[in-house]
Image (cartoon, rainbow, N blue to C red):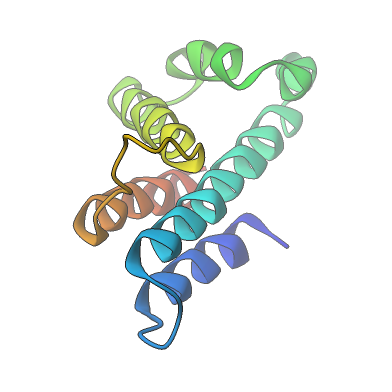
Length: 117
């Protein structure tokens, strides 16, 4: 799936009222949104000859380098979205799943990143 298709799937999971409980949907949507972001990051790095090797680096390393090649404000928003989505993807019994409003904002950030690159 392309990053845009993954992001569409995340939106669809969040809007599906017939799906399982909200917490399960939000974690599934977070996973799909994070996958979209990570795939687009890899595409972003591989599209430039001078940064082609960064696509194989860890997510944190890629995000650390991102402000040099992208609008710094957007790069920081993307890094924040990745961190929150990553945290939401890991189930902890003491954590609440992200709310629909939180996920909507994070999905919006990922969409902005996809549109800007």
